[in-house]
Length: 507
Image 1 (cartoon, rainbow, N blue to C red):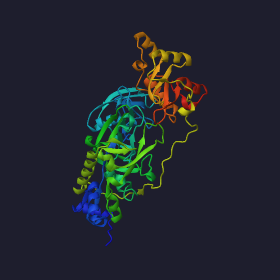
Image 2 (image 1 turned 180 degrees about the horizontal axis):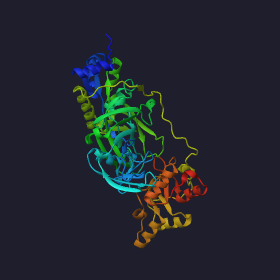
Image 3 (image 1 turned 135 degrees about the vertical axis):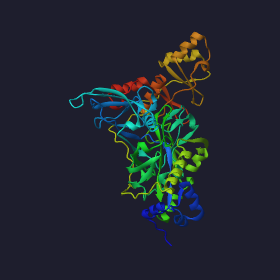
Image 4 (image 1 turned 60 degrees about the vertical axis):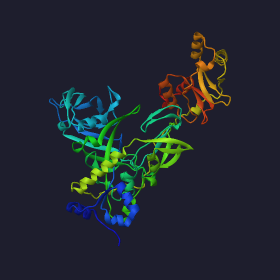
């Protein structure tokens, strides 16, 4: 007999206390054991959960009017600036906004956590001064209880899945995917796998505009599709909102990714009503069935190379294989907290404290993420590459290196093996120091940890390397670390003289 239920029927069971609720991971086991039809008969609601860094989060705040009143032109909370282009005393505080006195170590996400934790935060604002808003500045302290409005509105949350990240370059990278060690010594990933809300309803049959959800320990709602909504590639997102006053610090935490910036860890749980056998089958998804790509963040381009395709089961195991190499994995999301979210939502429903809502509008299933249009292509290293360059062997003397620098007029010489692979680099300054200290062998003075570039690397990424390491030239290497050219600050400066708009960078 065909299984068919309605949300109204399930809500009646919630009122009666007879509803059957399981978490998404429990449903996976049940569907595998009994099949989708029997699972649909037994289970009324499947609860999902995710807890991860969601930079695209923030809160709308209304501070109330001061006496005399001020129209805030700029406002800071614990020295984190909020956007004030709304109204006199309204502002939007973004989770990723950094502090002006503590930098990226403290940001909007931390301020939001502080407010939810009941702490007082410092408010500082300035205004232009008008006839109706004569005040030009104010400094005070506020708490969550002092605010008229504190509405969380997160433009992009609950990614259906994330691509995993690794780094094939020769230096450590600090990214929104965490710290990526050189030479693919680690891989990071996000998402809750089989607990992921959007993987349990991939066709948005029950998740849509108006769906009531668990948001950071309080009640929230889905506003619509999140920004960068990309369901065609199983990367759907949600825009969500809720009252900050009902939230709990346990499910909302400010955080900083080292070397990258501030963010906010957000706990989201969505109930999936099991209306039929088809929905039951979808909520039976397992980690082994959820696949994602491993991208190489060592290539600083929008379309990063895909090095492997792996399942969430493999990622969660702690190790994956990339091109025959075993790579350690680590999650940036918390599976423990994701399960806690799903379990807490399950309890709410079982206790009759949370009822399901029917979406008033379905999310788009055919949407595809588009890249930013660009008027000009950014130049790559290959566009300014010096193909004629000098190299020297590691067994050469300092005198040999000095002669080569004199003959070629260059100040940077790569040190290579007989096969042309990079061993190090020596500069004119190194030679001067070697003479002063009476060194004789090149191996004693060369820099072994060399900052390099690749042919397809954007010039602005190379400029950033030069600024960070205070250097003026980089060897260009191929995948086998053979030196195939050089790029220098002089080469890049020539582009500047051509008036290229895309290269307004400091050299």
